[in-house]
Image: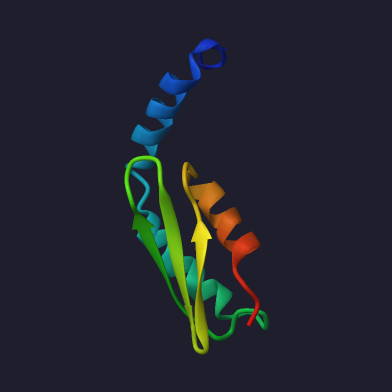
Length: 91
């Protein structure tokens, strides 16, 4: 209940501190392995998490015949997974 009354900026700070514990590159590595098992992303070679600063990040997706960028700014780890799946280009 108390969290609902917190100012948005304070809520973001707390969420970011919790996210520090999640290794987003490890999530990308393991998600890549799972996606490679699918017919849609069998040619996905890697997912690399890139954090520009505290508020901006993206995932670089490398395919056998090209690449793409998934915007993940301000995402928590679950949001990042959802964004990767939604934004990955089909090859």
